[in-house]
Length: 153
Image (spheres, rainbow, N blue to C red):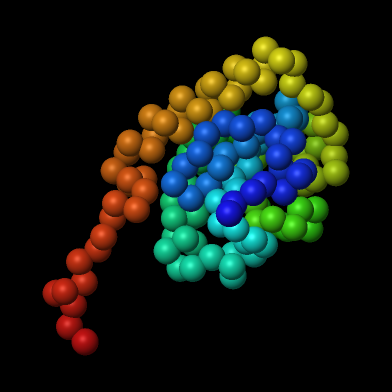
């Protein structure tokens, strides 16, 4: 059964996708979400079967687009580090030149908690955008079944 690591469970829930639970990192300095594959005991990408990996990539792509469209930035950072948490998770962070730690990584850098209103607004904005974007045919999760029957070997 899928369970969030205790550190991830402290994060704010945004939405569940087919493969991932999407969480908000409570740092108002950087728009930042975390995707956690709902695969029991997954610590690394190696713990996912190929279809799970492909679905994870679809969902990372969807979320990276949502974040960059809703929080204008020069750079999106997408990372699977695994050093701080024993559960597989993917960070998607919007960065701007001149932000609190530009151009350095955000891990272990300055942090500022959202106000309750800011947090509620960010969650609602991200959730709405994800729910709309996932109806795009490119992201019809698990719906694309390529036909390889015409290929010659």
